[in-house]
Image (cartoon, rainbow, N blue to C red; front, side):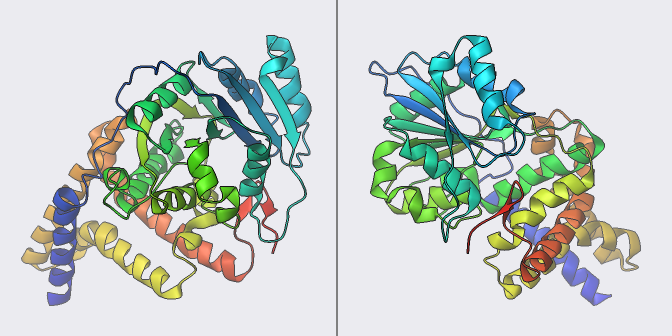
Length: 377
């Protein structure tokens, strides 16, 4: 059973590297508090929305109730919704007595080469002349001080892109199994501390909260520079960092996603939509990713349970312990107990399968959808 011993050794070595030499990705990074600047820049909050009438009664009031002391407004871009999103948004603002804070615009027909969400974001930018633009999703609820915190942080640190990964729902069995793992995998792929390091080539953002400085947006050529991107957040972060901009990505408790994932299939669909895009549509990268994840996440429990070699069993046990220890801080951040970290191999297996499905959809021309809308070719 030399093969299993070698696989176990590779897995253990990989986990040792991830624990000690991969940008401390496993430790949740939260923003530091910052003082409000003396001169407050103007702010526009842009919300691309497609068929979000159900989410808006919970999310839009949180935006209209922001306590930001500078000049600000919300621009909601209705992307050809069929459920009364536009009317719902206007009614909510009217009921709150804050119609003056909200502008609802209609996204234009999708132009050639543009992905749906980026086109909607661009329509909002076209209506904005503010110093800072906060992109957020229609299914996210914000604390009243969130915009103020973001602006204070951006101004105090001279950030061109300030992004925060919102708290995702973690209530159902599927969410508890898969959501912390999703955040863990994202941080492993894009270590936050490396993304925030100006000397590192790593660039990343979380699309739910992205505060962008107008000057850097103009410098990179506006949203057109990422017009075809399906992973718009990381693409925007890369464009900004490549242009010499300073970026920061952290986790946050001040914004939470309202989007439920009650079943495993709901998370599966989220991953399958863009996983193969992340692999640049490369069959070789797909094979390498599947093999790598299998060795990293699946080999330790499988070898431990079924190997007959004492050395292989011992190495795989150490690898499993290291995996669980590295994953535990993320599990704890989501309010779960540490034994839940033992489930990471199960979550990894599901994500591997969803990634393979993402590639299958690409070759069947079913990938790259946003709210059921596929980017124009």
